[in-house]
Length: 85
Image 1: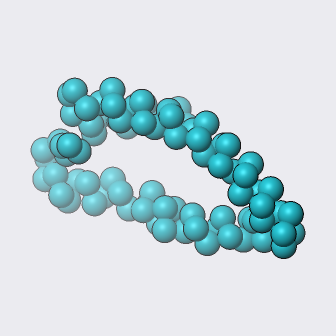
Image 2 (image 1 turned 90 degrees about the horizontal axis):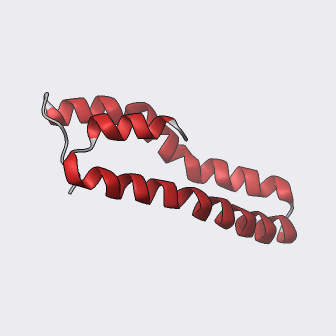
């Protein structure tokens, strides 16, 4: 979680940097609370193991994006910082 601050300083431009950091740090408690609800619903209905299988399937695209995003940004940017808004 703490590495995003350094990434945002490098890749996010000027005035939107604060908004991106605010959104990111807002998503942490939101994801934790949604995880409790998801785990309770799925764990109570079909068993707790299926909650992990469902999460693994849902997170696979994000994991693949995490391995490729910086290379894709360098291709898109061609040396110019990416403007997100």
